[in-house]
Amino acid sequence: MCCIMRDFFCRLLLIAVLSMTAASIHAQIGQHRNDFAVGFNAGFVLSNVGFTPTVSQSFHGGVTAGVTARYVCEKYYSSICAIVAEVNFASIGWKEKILDKYDQPVINPSTNEQEQYSRTTNYVQIPIFARLGWGREEKGVQFFFQAGPQFGLFISESSSANFDTDHPNLDERSNKTVAQYDMSVENKFDYGIAGGLGMEYSVPRVGHFMIEGRYYYGLGNIYGDSKKDYFGKSNFGNIIVKLTYLFDIVKTKK
View 1 (cartoon, rainbow, N blue to C red):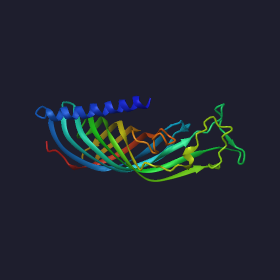
View 2: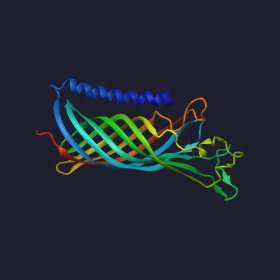
View 3: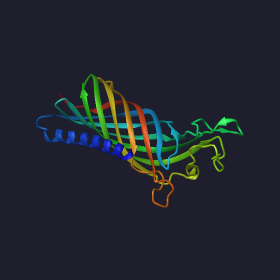
View 4: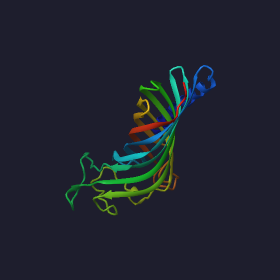
């Protein structure tokens, strides 16, 4: 499944890059653009970690926010070609779903509460996208697709649990993987592929307003993955919903 998802996003990225390359090669047919805009973004992230051995999870909710820069270089027929880069703070991680063999929540006998565990990891993330847009440039609605690599730098982490993680109740659990409780993030550098679809509304002399849905698939692992390590795989998956506002710095004279 992981290989299929990785191949899917690699193909999306390849299509976007090849489309922009074709536009550049046929510059005599396309219309040159020299538009540069900057602004800020904010959104909500649902994340988990693909562990092997498996750790049962629901989605961890967090926030992301940062700055965005966009350079529009070409309009080729109806496609508007651009490069987009962001520098974001993101709060991601995983939240465990602790169930018994009947898929019922495990209750802590000491507190009579459902056992819960989550880990929050904070990153600086830098996605770099090739973007293709279709629609209005100056005023109105434009739809877009963008894809590209994303890099992340680990900042800090924290965990939350309502039971003793040194002595978890394994007798009642259907999933008995608990090694992660004592493990801090080992690999401080994260990398992967991100892609998204969105809509932009442009207002002359005001700016550009965007809403986007995006998915990130991590190609790196947060823990060691050699034969001597416990986890063979521990990569991030993020679903992001993001709002962005950009204002123009340079505009092509038409």
